[in-house]
Each structure stands twice: as C-alpha cells, then as structure tokens.
Amino acid sequence: MKDYLSKHAKVIPPSGIRKFFDIVSEMEDAISLGVGEPDFDTPWHIREEGIYSLEKGKTFYTSNSGMLELRQEIALYLNRKFNLDYDFKSEILVTVGGSEGIDLAFRALINPGDEVLIPEPSFVSYKPCAYLAGAKVVPIPLKEENNFRLTAQELETYITEKSKIIVLPFPNNPTGAVMEKEDLESISKIILKHDLIVLSDEIYAELTYGREHVSIATIDGMRERTIIINGFSKAYSMTGWRMGYAVGPSEVIHLMTKIHQYGIMCTPTTSQYAAIEALKNGDSDIGYMKRAYNQRRRFVLDSLGKMGLRCFEPLGAFYVFPSIQKTGLSSEDFAKQLLLEQKVAVVPGTAFGESGEGFIRCSYAYSIDDLKIALERIEAFVN
Image (cartoon, rainbow, N blue to C red; front, side, top):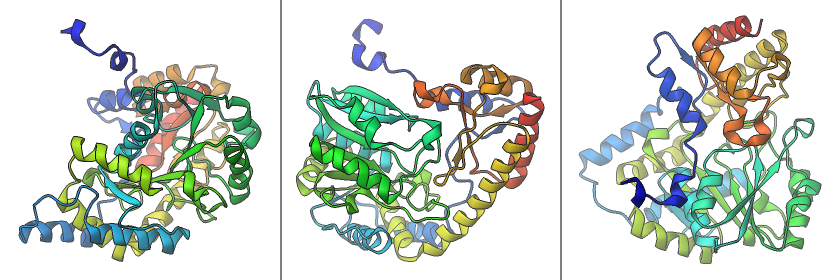
C-alpha cells in the first residue's frame, strides 16, 4: 500500500509532543510535564449540563454552524471579556476544537503557492495544516531577548509578494509569551501595509498573568482581516469535549462552514450544551484554575532559577520554556536522556520549530506534588 499513499502527507513529521507522550505512558513511575492539558476535571455544573442533555434525548444533529444559542453566548462572551463585537448568525462557526478551526481557516484562504508566515517556536499544528492546504510555510524565528514576541521589524523582514497570512500564536504555546497592545499596534501597521490576513490563535486568552489579553481584532483596521480561533479546552478544562470556535468576516466564516459541513457536519450536540453552560456560569471556574496555574508558574520559575536554568517569565498559557544550553546537550538529547535517566518527560524545543533548539517545554498544568518531584529529578539530572 505504501505506493498508494499521499506523498504530500507522508513528508509531514509526526508530532514531537506525542512521541514523548507515548514513551512515558508505558514507563512505570514516570512523570510527564509534556502534554498541554489541564489536570482539573471539567467543572461539575458543566458536566451535569452535558449529562442532562443526554437524559433529555438531545442527541440529534445541530446546525452546521453550531446551535444558535451557543453562538449567541460566544458573541456575548467575546464582547464581555475582550471587547469584540461579532454577529452570531454570520460571523461565528463552532468547530471540533480549536485545531479544526485552524485547519478550516487555512483551507478556506490558501491558494497553491501562497505563503503563510508562522512565528516560531509555536504550536505544532500550524505548519502541517498550512502545508496540507497548499501553502509555502515561512517560519519567523522569535528571540529570547525579545521575550519571544513578534516585532514589526522581524515581520517585515520575512514578507514577500506571495505572503498572504500571518499566524499570531499568542498567548504562546510553548513559550508562554504574550503580545501587549503596543506590540500589536506596531505589527498592525506592517500587516496593513502588505495587505495580510491574520489568523489569531487565542485559545489561551483567559490564561494571562498580571495583565489582560488584548486581541489584535480590536486594533484599528484589523477586525475585517482577522480570523480568531478560540475554544473551551484550556480555559474550562474541557479538552475531551472537543469544542472550539472561529470568528471573523462573514465571507471567510461562510466558506469555512461549507468545508466543515462536508467533513464534520456539526460538533457533538452534548458538548454544545455543556459549552453553553460554561459560557453562562463558568467565570468563577476560570478564576479558580487560573490562580492555581499562577501559583505553579511562580514555583516552577523559582525552581528552575535555583538549578541554574535560565528562563524568561512567561505571562500567558501554562508553559515554561527554559534554556538548557548550559548543559551542552541538544534539546532532543536533553529530553531523551532526562526521560531515560530520571523518568521525567518534557518536550524538546525543536518540536515547535528549529528556533526552539536549546530550549525545552515544561507544562505546569500538573499538581504541585507532581511538579515538586519532577523538578527535583530535573535538578539531579542537570547536576
């Protein structure tokens, strides 16, 4: 069968995250800091709403775009939290997680040969999804000295006449970097100058520390050229429910919906009812989990500093991205040897792009007890 397989798909490398996840799942007494998944159960009132919908027999297809009530709640939430104003009837699409939204946006916007600019290190799905849609991917290496933010000068350097889309992966996975309003205003001038489309992945918008998230769609001239990807997995600890959404100009959302209706039909009905409850009554849940993440964030940063691993302060998401250059090991070798010798799984920075060399990603979406043991083992390994 190998002669029949798609050459286009075969060249895509497997996820650098899942490789270590698969190894640690079969290793006794191992601790994983590798997967970006909240350790909290989905709040009970959200689960209960999903259960209740099943008990009431609400198990039929919904609109391709998602239930009208859910889209209304999404519009209200975005306006309340981030000062974003979208028409729930024509500018919102409910997707199977944020990942489907990313895939749909690329497929709706890309023609063969278009260039997609992707700041890296960043989430592992952007590059393969853009490639599968027919784009040429142009990585923009972000720098530690800039706190892994995208600067206007860096963006301008990589733009060509074929550039079409710029991905904004902030708050960032894996670095935890955020973009301040002044950063967004600066790059917006370049985006307007070169007539680019923005794909803004804001799945971690609720998880910022000491500041509020600002969406680039609130900057003058950006709303009409921005597609926002968001969802419920991180903020509400609803990873397995597979609930996300995309918002943007009606023309783009309409085409994304057309692709979605042939490939997916609609997102799970049970999950949609749970998502409505999350939006209506989940603010306190977000606050509780965010406070716990912030405590863990400070603990992990302090521990890394004591063992001599340089790490800039992440202000978003639930990851740290320490430098391991002092050890003389590559990111891949560090992660492999740490797993084999100390039974701790982290992700090599190169899983998120070549510019991640010399760094590792550690998630702190784990209990303090697990983090203490893992960090003690990392310190022993570094020593």
